[in-house]
Length: 138
Image 1 (cartoon, rainbow, N blue to C red):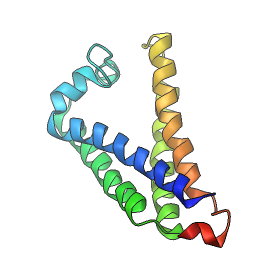
Image 2: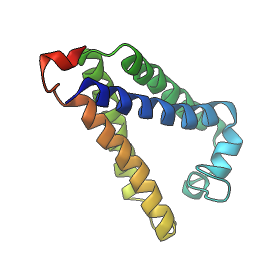
Image 3: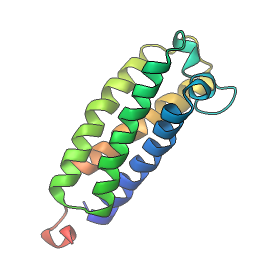
């Protein structure tokens, strides 16, 4: 696996964490009502608003942003593996919860939600794959 592909994967994870984490941490009420886009209601459809919980989710994503950005900017096999493992633990649990709670969502929202969450799991796995050759570690 080429290190450049891993850097791109880490960068995409960092950007997704910035989007979700920034929104949840700094505009929790808006995040609750409108995530992932106004009118979608992926969060509010699952239970009552809890500012503390939404801000904590924002903080979690911002912490993952730091890790993924570090991996993208200072790549090494070890950093990529740790970043991939952290995202994989979070991503699999997050995906499993949403996969089990889809009844209140439209077919389009189900596809979008599982696609986005599944995408983060795939990107995490990319970070865990070994480099194709020692030269790719540069």
